[in-house]
Amino acid sequence: MANNGAKKTHIVYEVNLNFNIAQKYLEMLKEKELIRNENGLFITTDKGKVFQDIAKEIEL
Image (cartoon, rainbow, N blue to C red):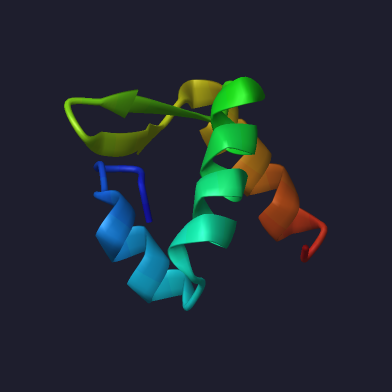
């Protein structure tokens, strides 16, 4: 979803979470360097893309 950049509002509606829960997940993903926030857009990092590939492979 955030491979090309996504605003928090788009992410919240796409994954059907409330803002408070989504904020906690986004903070955790940033701490793990799986996403970065750039000018209000959340963008998947290279490390995050590797994680996505692995998660798909093991069907998380």
